[in-house]
Length: 470
Image (cartoon, rainbow, N blue to C red):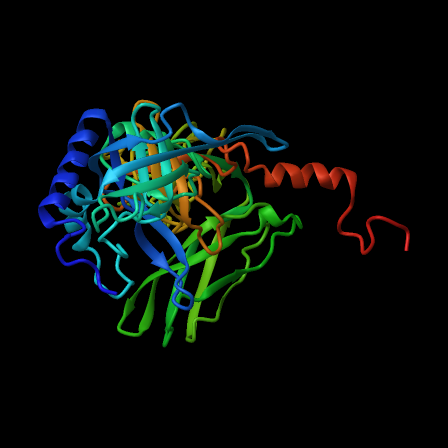
């Protein structure tokens, strides 16, 4: 039997009145909370599993606290892993207010296919965050009840949000509200980088001895070399590896051919009594020939020893050598740049002669001597050599301490390398790594390495049967 047509069961004007009354009550008795929608950054392509997400928008909305007597849930529980906080919160917000003032902004990121940054923008979603200012805490929406009260006058007017205390899992939280963003500065797996000014002057020392190669003569530069050939020099008669002379070919490419221009010593050798023979190996060419002269009585520089490769070198620095040279000749060194703006080595262009004590080696200052810029919260930084990527958690310019959470580890390095440059991909900041501590210092639950180390002291898991003798 049809309904009585003379009763409306809720007219549009009555529904409007109820909605207005609810909105007014929420503004009077409610609390202003911050609604933070979850955006999907990356997800699996097969089962659409979300791999990473971010929270970088915020919307203020009034909400009524249903659990007005305190947090619900299991409360604070003491477990074998420490204290576990199980606080829950139930909030009621206006359906109309959400649809008019939040949903339109979220709708711009909802492409309707379920693959955009926002999925289902028309209502609050499970997984979004609520910042509760009274407790200064972040809660995650676990369930959205949209049919309670149940169709008063034929319509629903509110959303009831059942929330649990948010457990951080390396999501990107960058709402531009300091009271919210600072809540996760020390949350998750965080490592510390101690940085220094990008430019650091390189330091080298020099070793002297007699019986060294005084000069190499390039008699024939050869032909058809496709790459620099290796230089083989007869070993020193002392039998010590460190006394063997070592040289490298210096030249340039002309088209596809490598032209040898000179030979530099990286070790002038020691203990030679007769001039060693020099041969050229590899490089795809032939015909190169060289001879050398030696000094058997007086001392010269036989090698430069790296103490600190420095950093911040974009051009080859000058090498100054000073010290007791008697009536002889001062040595000449030529620096070679490394891939990380440091001094990889100093080649011997002239070992000098007549040194009575080890001379002082002075490397000129780097091109960039101070750190540049300020790292920004949540930006990606990259190691110039390791290619390790991380996200900035906190940057203290006074102490040059950078807290980071990892995004991608270098394939061969496993982390940042001391001496490499840390590049801010957004800010352009440049500093050099002085010390890198990969161990997590902040998350009390990330103790895997420590637990494994202690377990290895008790049981040898490398044995086929660590629990018996068979």
